Image (tube, rainbow over all chains, first blue to last red; front, side, top):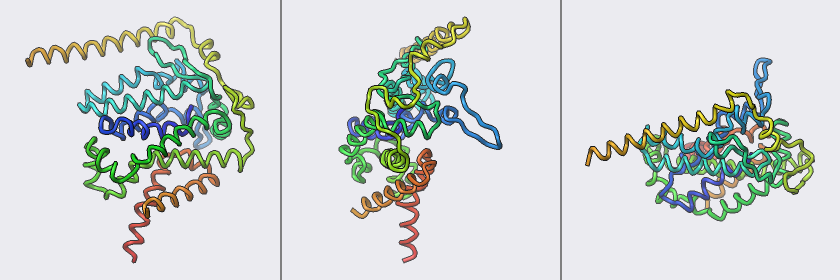
Length: 283
Length: 50
């Protein structure tokens, strides 16, 4: 998993695509795969009860689990849904780009993502840094900010800082606001200074978090740096091989992913055919 | 330039509080509330009080 890249990547993408994308769905797409599921990976307690996945890595990235949220087809499915409901091409495209950025970024850790779900439940992983979500969020933070993960985030932070023009008031007025009616509607209730703060929140959050976690991990606590591939080695990392080998092989699970793939293909196919028929009838 | 200074001050404060109370660093919503308070609500209140 990545701690800061998902906050900063949308601004760098925004810089390169300008008015062809909208920042709000780009950010939503970038956060979407973890939005409703991360708390269950780390666990949450209330009134003496603790809710936590039995196998956090399997739940987060695998199948059975919610690993499908990190697949390329999940981005396509939600983008199509956005397009069908709101008829906004820019929102659909921006969500898709944001979600794909997240899914591809997360292939860099030792667990990786099921990029081609539902066609296969194989996890694709480059294994650059340790996946340690199962150890709890503080150990995970310490491990992440001691290995190549924090260096990767640093790369995006530097690229984000070099793209500083996207954060200016002039860019906001000339590119962000005209590209997305959301800002016009929000502007009816909020002054520009608040809209600008809302626009910049994720960059602010990512940049500050990167610095704060680094200080916390190496000044307040004493986690050891280890920039080896797949490190830090002092943490018990989960690897894609473990999950790929331990997937459920019961007939129900084995037939579930082809069935889902077929359902998705039929849904997309029928939608495209209906649109084509409608287009043909109107001409 | 005043705006940049305000954001830098907010960042320094957020990092300081975040290092002391790392729980805060997990929440995007709390960060959003903090930033809005620091760069919009508080300056607007101070402006009104002057």
